[in-house]
Length: 416
Image (tube, rainbow, N blue to C red; front, side, top):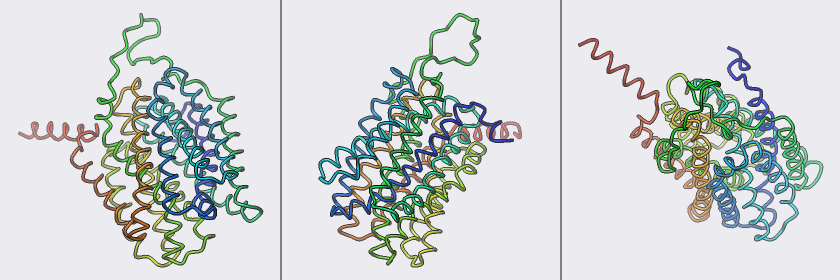
């Protein structure tokens, strides 16, 4: 079955196209961030604290984003946040003081999470019931394309001028993507008027079902939330401190470290879609558990590698597995909630992602500074191991697991 037939809504493809442009901007900015801050004279603790402020911005907006979407619409909030991110990334390289950069990083985090929640809400509402992981995996592929291209573009631009030119180019790309969505994207039907299955257009409207409370939504999607917390913690820590670890402990040059995010994104790009298909086929939580086991093993093995290319392969496999968890966990959320609860679910989901990004760099920075980079990687492996155990305990949260258990019970009764 062709991709265009599995995802028929043209608005989904428009979000994918804008996401590619945005993720190129992300890839450019992230590949230069730690190097830029280090060149400005900021310590590892300063860098970790700035990442903490970035996470605060994510938490702040994610707590209210569902209400903003319900009030103004997903498209409107999505486009606004695109423009906001473009402004922050453009201004960033021209600031020098810790306070001014911290304020900008706060808004950087807020606009970023606004983009994620808006896009994810629209994609979950427009993706087919049996293709949610597939739909979200293509979204992750769009992200991966940009993350893979962004570092290379940043490397090329920094050969022509100062690091600041990479951030300005990222701002221009984000602005262009926002304008495209403003002109081409239709408002999300899921956030303005829910059409319930089984209700015909000419029937009298029925009362909508009761919306779940935040606590009820959280309990239904707890596996997804823990997965995204772990990934946010891991991603934010690795992006900031892996390049420094490589330069200090492995003898890797600054120019070589710029390509590390590209290796990670390449793995994500190659395997995210197969992971989504696998999740839709055998169960989302089971797929997430298997990806976590392989990814954590790669992170553990990374400590013992010395060759730059071997480390590149390890990073690529980690990206193929750990980064693929995000779209599958979103799909698990999509099959666990009703459409009217999607905006609330994605807000809670991204709050946990933000909490991971909030605490990860701060804790990782302290471990790195006082115990070394290897110990930092060990504690990330321990974190993924915790998620694996949690997913085993609450395996029944996956509707696919419940269906397998019901089929097994029916088969046992038939045999007896």
